[in-house]
Image (tube, rainbow, N blue to C red; front, top):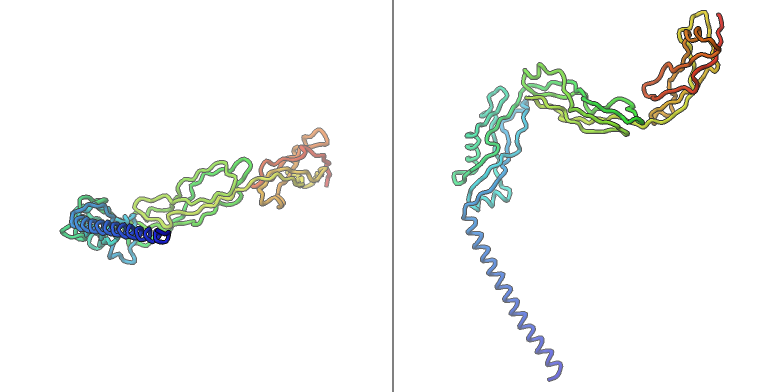
Length: 325
């Protein structure tokens, strides 16, 4: 037998094997699909129990009505129903539970749906063939108001301290200086201000930017719920500056001259103000001149801007002469 005939027989045999293998695989897949169909039919006809989150909305809400309470986005239920219905719900086709504010509202700012009524509303959504075994929450209580809001000032509750080498340079900035409060008449009449939650920081070395929640008021809705605070913090830089020496409490008929007339002051200043001239003043008190037994008198720091820290003078005394006018 030549090599060509041998190769032809091998290819023929391989083709028969591949054909039988392909038929076996196809047959296996067919049986697997049929089994899946039977399982699906049986499962969809059986009762199943699932946990579902039913979307919740209020209806018949007028434009002048403001909901005060945080209304749940959904009511969680445990539902028992046929597999066909469950498949539909699992695919996202859930009904929405709509609570009518006119039906359950008392007209004075309260919507109350008792447990029995909430369960009844849910049963109406799913029909008699479904069984609801659990509901969370089991009842609803929602506050609302038809009154316009009251604007009150917002008070910042802050306790912040920079590090020893830093300073708070400037006013604390807030995204809102007041808030709107929605509530009933009694709550609004006694309300004069709102507060942020307490903020406490120590050893700040850089500007602090933070979102801070407004402290809640019982029975009220606050807009906005939070504000953005900016506390400007800068590092302190060492600086020298020549400052004038002034005479304090000098009589009108006397003129006191100091030598030198300018002294050097050293201090710490915020980085952004390093190139600015600081209004620091040095002073000699006339009473010290009268009590001095020498030609020198003590010189002191008399005036310091709030942004300057650790101010000192290069000398502790200066010479002086007194001129009569």
